[in-house]
Length: 472
Image (cartoon, rainbow, N blue to C red; front, side):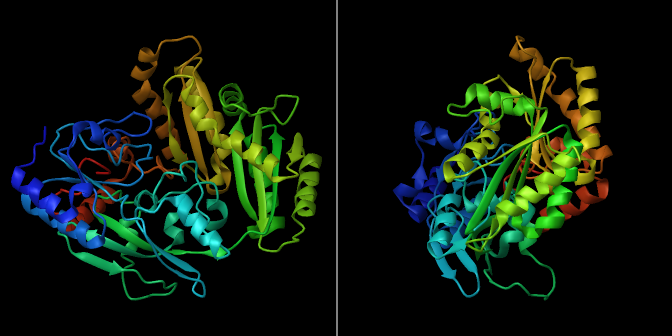
């Protein structure tokens, strides 16, 4: 049953048409929970505008009526940022109908797309003109550009290309009062005051609604070499990535660290995955080198680095993929971790970042603290070593019930976050805050940072109707 008055409902339908309005409770369900079913809410209606002008008018109508809006893209987030509360009074604003690729400028190396474009389609559009859009993550077949921007998504290629913030030149944004800011400029230099696009990237729809973006393109990759390397400990990973950066430069595009526990879960629960080695090792890295040259000597470069790593005791074993099928098999071991962990019952996911140099000490000290306070929990640590982003996830002890483990979630989180802050890190590296980490941010961010964030929120959304209850 809708909590919106019928006059507003009819006005919304008049704007977006019957195809753009979902009132049926059953049809709304996929918009009201995240893909893990970790967050659920209710909504008065789901509105699906098909243009920036329609978004503007929907926002204006809701603002005049005092109705809160929850922007939503592919709904693949991990922090509940795109899920409404349980009041049933909020409007979910889905941008999935805004899925046009507006322009490709090959000379300027840019592509202009709407917020509802699926990331994989964006990658394919770039490939069709011999270019690369480098953002790559597990949900790329269903996540949208708007969501990627709203959370400043990272993924596996940040080491070389940066986060979504680094890949963006311009934005089009509908402000909280319905006005449209046209910042779709494909400029790499524009030194005319505050760089306003950065206010909205990573803001999770709390300051305005991103409707389109101008994004950077790169030369297509024509040579690729991928290796799976066994390591004795995380310090070896830090030493090895320093060696490879020195010798390979920007050709190093992937360097993913995984604990044995992470890989064990994948081998147990993801069909078709096999251990590249006969022996078990405590840690692994997946290394990728790429180049725009067809015949780049990447294999020789990698072999030289690994040879030195073996001599220094940084590497224990290694296998280099010899074809695309083997490359896919190695990446499946890395990309299957999150899914595999879910088969082991509830998992407590912590997306943190710390200086690369601190990763070994952080893992060693935090492991000890956790296991001392919560014996037999299983620590699933993996992540993007090159940018200091660790997914430090916890699964329940073998053979125990879910409820007692879930009851310890906050206490476990505090141990991890206290350690993160002690190592000058961040409690959210690439997943955002959403509703999952909003309260934690209040505890771990400085009072001055929070004051500045609230000042921006008040200036751009004085009525507090843009995705309320998220971030702040």
